[in-house]
Length: 174
Image (cartoon, rainbow, N blue to C red; front, side, top):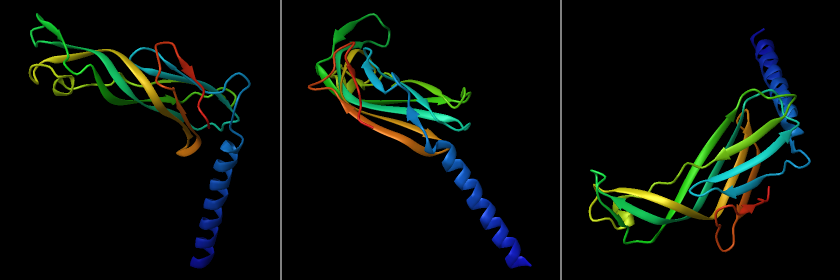
């Protein structure tokens, strides 16, 4: 009897796993909805339209690498500003979008990185108490990942050559 119950539980588990896989097996980018990633100043924004999804939550994430430029050091009181002594600092930043209300198995992806942070020491400020402001990030490489139910549907990578300027767009390879 115990063996029969274990067999039933194992078969049911495999069936449900197969259903979950089938729900996302047809995922694809819509016509005109292929991923595009754009430099929007201090952030990288990626958009796409995905169809053929199941009903589970979709999570899109982007990780961008580049160089922070136009660094300004400000005293803690905010009274004095000086340019950082290091004009360009390598940075990376990421961001995530959770899409819970899918419409007819479709999801619109619009995910941005956070603005990266640079320490006062990295920027070359007079001391670590100063506050750093970044005026621009030139992105070089990035990765866009789209998952549903913990399963990776798309892992896309792209680059800007030599590096991005504000408004530049790139289509990653998925």
